Image 1 (tube, helix red, strand yellow):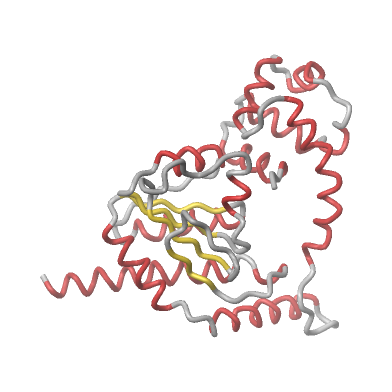
Image 2 (cartoon, helix red, strand yellow):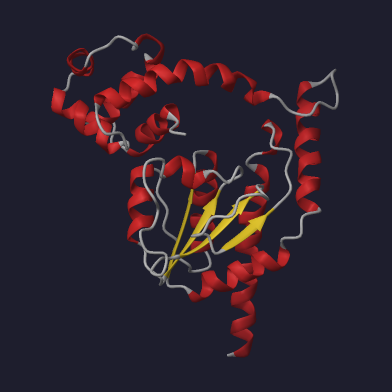
Length: 266
């Protein structure tokens, strides 16, 4: 389930603009439809880098070698056709696209309103308070939710770790111990399938971080996820990432309230 374009976008969003990885990722994004027959040497020349820089780039984005990159480029055209349907959403007013879309977002949030998640969020907030090491991750849009959570929690004095590059997310999760709390934002529940496509998150389930997954997937049950916060969603274009954003806001609000309650007892 490796999504090449998402990986490339995360690379240019996290690498220095003058780095080789940025140059390579930018070239691939801009020319993705014309690279089916490109060789490693040709790509290196087009990006003004060495052949070894191309090989290193492939490893940095989670691929074994240049052949694996070529395979992902070939798959992109097929996946891109399916992606054209991503903008479908429940229509309410044919005469106004703007109003129809907003009404669709509101309608989906009603599903969140009817979801039973308050106690689950309270339990998560208590764990955020108790754990010294807390991290949050997501895939593309969901990572933006993690970034917002990081910013908002720091206003209450809680420092949360997150990062945009998936290779860094993988490294953090695999090295995390039982003293770490990790929050995964994943509308579809496929975060671990996407980020750990060719490996397992943990070799030893007895020594691992505590993991919460916030998702609209009611069917998933992973052996290394300890707690789920599940909400109802239509799973169309108007449904994501708004519920996750609301839940992140609720986490921050309840965390601030928890601090206030503890201050009163001092």
